[in-house]
Length: 475
Image (tube, rainbow, N blue to C red; front, side):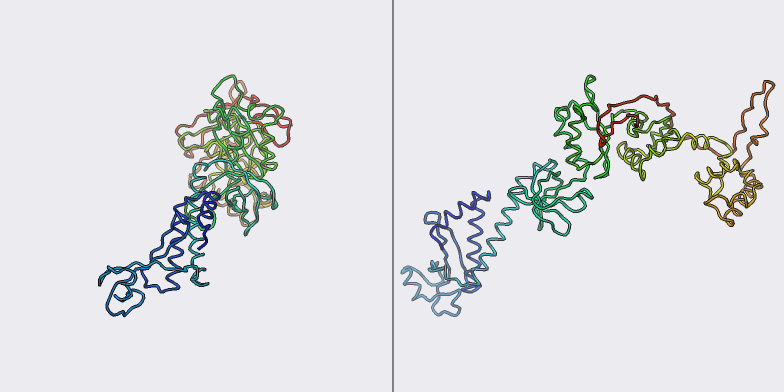
């Protein structure tokens, strides 16, 4: 072995952060494996690292016998007495082996593999101890390479993996770019990578705001919820424990500087900053911004919200492909059903309800029937097929089926007809009488409270196209 082995061990342990004892054990095990490959697997071999001389010593132990039958495990008494004159039969005699560096190429390769394996195990333990307390933090690194869509990020001491499904879609990095990500998981025993990163999780956005907004780091402003569709849009709800601190303004910063830093890190992801409220009606009003909300009905038991918006605000409240209402629903943790004022008024109409009582008629079709003057089941029963097939969603066969169903329900008395609109009687003063109630059962939902939401603008206007602050009117 090399005389400067001790110096090499010290240097490796210092550079890699290994425990010296672990590396010494790896070398001893490697030399033992190599010696057995060269000299025979049945030999009783013991390897020790001599700290004083900085070399590895190999000893083999054999039993003293009169006649040797197995040279690997036995030694003759005559040969043993040359080594130790006081030795006796059946004694275990240890002998130091010389020239262990001449173990051969195969044995040396075996030793190399053992040392590499042991060093990898030791390095995994070092990396785990180094990063286990940093789980949940944002780390910075350099894009090293790409493997089957996964990004390998160099963090200095080790590499981490940013999986394909944790990367922001349509946002590209190239080799050598600096990148920040959320340390999502630290694995102790992993064959490929111990460190798993994420840029799509909600916690990544929350941590970015914590780094940019001192009020959040100090605990004055709290992040109450986050919902994201990575790369496209996000909503974050904030609240302040001090009345004189505006949580939205604190997150936005002077001229939007703070939130713009977050937007740039997320490569243009739009962020809505929402004032949190313990009242679900007020909360959903803020969360659906920039759309205005006319009325909210909350069912606390089922955690559902019926939100009524002006007719011209329906598409704005729902968002592109339902994105706005979907993010708001995730933010609140409630199911949100958004309806226009016209649709809500239709649902309150008894005749409209009789149309919905027919199997096969949903609200969109009922709206079309209402627009054609078919405002009750009675009108549907009296309608001609030609009156219905003009609707895009109904063909001749379907029109006949709906008319037959309407007649059948009326004959069976399942649905009682409301008074016809043109036959509503009036009193002596010319006021219309109240329409008759439908006998169709209408289940009362426990815990449902109808809340009128004041049309107030909540939040702060920011001069940036990427940021929407809850409650701002759409320009």
